[in-house]
Amino acid sequence: MADKQRQSDSLAYVAPQESGQVDAWTREAGQRGGQQLVEVTEVIPPAAVSEALHLSPGEPAIVRRRAISLDGAVIELADSYYPASLARGTALAEKRKIKGGAPTLLASLGYQARHVSEDLDFRAADSTELKALSLPEGASVLSLLRTTTTDDGSPFEVQHMVMKAPRRLHYEIEVD
Image (tube, rainbow, N blue to C red; front, side, top):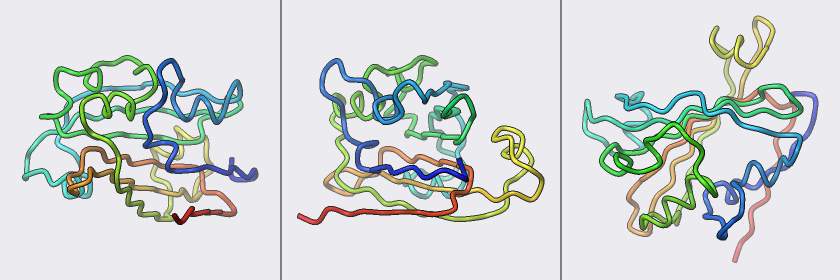
């Protein structure tokens, strides 16, 4: 999607949905978009994720790996990490779609997004990303690390997304 523009609201992706509503990506992309749940497993997360979740060294997390598509092409690799102590025994740890998306389930468990921090990085794609995103050798990607916390600052979800690098980024922030 490097040659197309897409407008997105990050807040929509961390907000729970009303009963019976689909997840935010399905609502935004409609018939043009999709997502495949590739893997759900317990892992020792990468250092940046472990640090963002305030996990002790060697402490596990549950990761939900998805391939996000638009118009039939994979445009993003999205890994969502949750402390294993929070996710075990919930649908977060099962390889199936979650009705209304993870934010809806998390809110029902008492984890409502109150603060979101996003770190963006443009970098060269690695070999796995080149293949998964159908990119040419030497292509760049946009890497986004999103940390979601509660009112008291406790992190409960870290998402690492790798996207085909856009030609333009556009942000709008609503100030109350």
